[in-house]
Length: 177
Image (tube, rainbow, N blue to C red; front, side, top):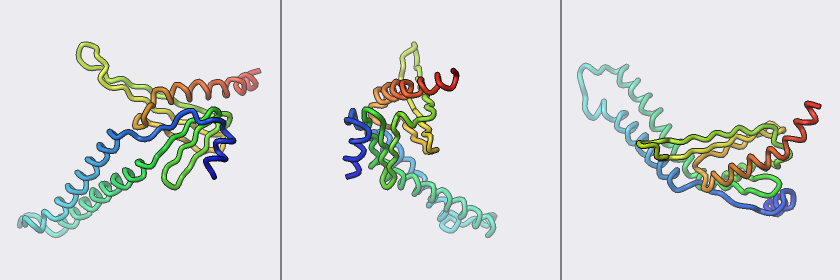
């Protein structure tokens, strides 16, 4: 039902974008490393006792280990949430769906857009990696952040910049004139 209302307000669906598999693997590896490293750090003072390692040091080590394990679990939790992220591009705006949060961003309500493109150049001038991100700030104060983990980010970014510029230009001319 919400999808039908969105479609009616924003026009026809142009494209749909999900997070890439590469981003999910990277976050999974980082999360597992943090959980395992934190668990080892927390257990090590008791499993391998050292007489020079006093009780306050063990407590501090346990607190640091708990923080690292917490960070690992947060990464794994974000992985589950990001699997369900879908960005739908319509003729008159976009919809960012992430688990329980849905942000509808009509192009006419975008106050600013900030785009960033990076290229990692390797030996002999060969481009090894391209990265692109966009941050949309709406007049309502909401923000939509689109990063390089989305599939088809190049086409999505080009379309966004063109449509937002087309809607922002008349407002800018009115303000200046």
